[in-house]
Image 1 (spheres, rainbow, N blue to C red):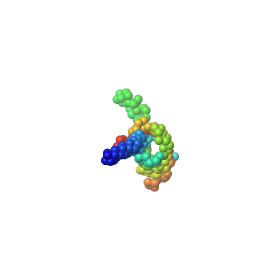
Image 2: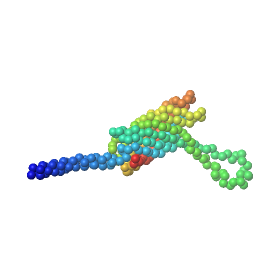
Image 3: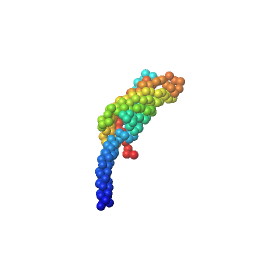
Image 4: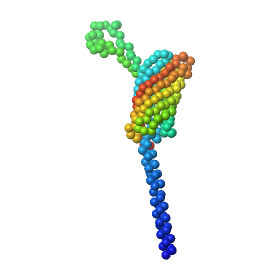
Length: 223
């Protein structure tokens, strides 16, 4: 009889312990689910932006097209570290062909469409400048719509008549990111880079500033 009572007590204790352990397991499952629901915000992200840039070198202002690649490291509190690199291209008009020295009789017989073909100036994309650097991002919220600001430093190089110039430039930007899914989001932003004199060689060419307005997409692969 004593053995039966002891066995019953052991069974009841084991059942009570198993019941009390279920909430702990459930809490762990819920915690893991909430972590997975946060999606790409806790994983490294890669992005691509394109936009319009304005820049000034030796007080000569130009406009171009900005293409930027970036990698955002995993989240640390509300801050993230970003590595980025980009290039700015600008249009330059090629001089139209000069037909003043061409014999008009031969010209009219050889190609009736030559005048209409070359009367308009042609445009070529040229390298303006390139940059690479790092920035720290601060997100104001953790939801699907995340406004952010960033600041950092960029190493910039540009083409000169005598070769290439280069300098370091503090950068700042602000934008708005909208999460579409756990692994994909889109964003728009504005950036400003303040230039310094040429640090690469003895020429006095200096970069004044670079501004850009761009939009892009980012994705967080399931690693």
